[in-house]
Length: 184
Image (tube, rainbow, N blue to C red; front, side, top):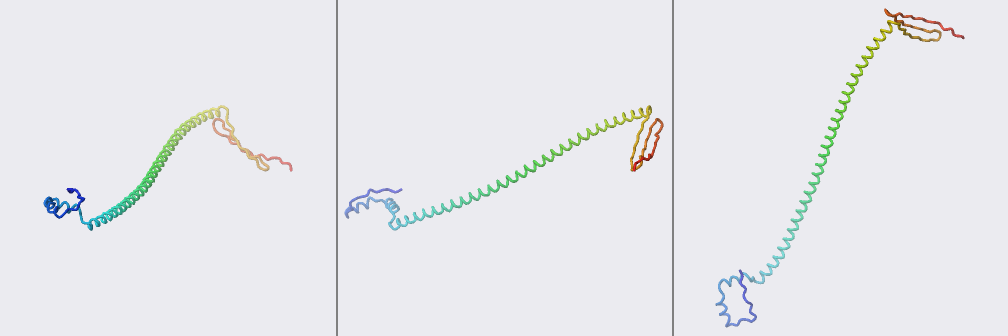
């Protein structure tokens, strides 16, 4: 710690000097030598202080630049990574949607095929029953009344006629060619 001495406004006389020397102790001399550097050292320390302040400002500026550059680089990397993640998520969503739609379409197709198969099976059963009933009634009507079936074809001067008559036991087929009288 520094001890402050009162500043005297008068110049000490020669008689007072020995008295002052006696009052000063060894500790106070060391404190005075450290407390008040010579003027040359004081000027250098002012220059050193200014240089230190300039160096501190410059180093701070460099550190701030480096931190700003690092922060901007990190921001750029984060933006890029977020963009990549959003693209990956979009691809996953699209793949999930396509898979869902394919599964949905497959389910709809299977349901449609199953319904068609059931309805067709029922239709075939009904058709088979109709054929059985028709065959029964046709046989019954043939046996009682007979059945006539025929075809004809007209050419330039003839009529071709083919008849099939069903009577109980077996068919009777009649084929005729009738000439047509054409006026010339």
